[in-house]
Structure formats: C-alpha cells, structure tokens
Image (tube, rainbow, N blue to C red; front, top):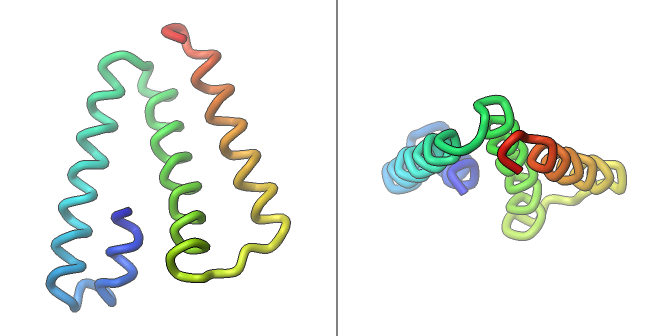
Amino acid sequence: VWAYFMKSSAGFTRLWPSLATIAFMGVSFALLSISMKTLPMGVAYTIWTGIGAVGAILVGWLVLGERLAPLQVVAGVLIVSGLVLMRLSSPQA
C-alpha cells in the first residue's frame, strides 16, 4: 500500500500521499517486527519483502491499470511459491 502512496506523492511533493506513505511504512515495519517475534529473521524478512513485491505488482495492475506481461505473472507465482516454501521450511512452521 505504501508504494502506491509513494507513487502518488510525486516524489514527496504532495502532502497527503507523502504522509500516507510514511504512515503505511510504519505499519509495514511494525508488522515485520511482530513477525520476527515468532519467525527467524531471514524467513520473516523474506516473506515481508515478497509480500511487498507481489502486492506492488497487484496494486499496479488492479489500481493503476499497469499491464502485466505473461512472464511477470509467472514471476509473481514463483515469488508466492517461494514464500510458501520459506514459511513451511522454517523451524516454527
């Protein structure tokens, strides 16, 4: 979500999208911190970045109308598959 507002902020030149970017970044980091209480750092961070990557792809496609090439869809599926494998392979799974 914060990536969408960052794009909308036009390089942090628009106040409200800039403030929304900062707020949602804070929420994002807080959720990462919470996940690190129960998951190893490498697993938590990998899942966090993967969710962000796939989320940005989906927001770009669904909200901003960006086109997705077939290979980009395959890449998104591979990222999600990797996230599932990371979670399943973690000691706390």
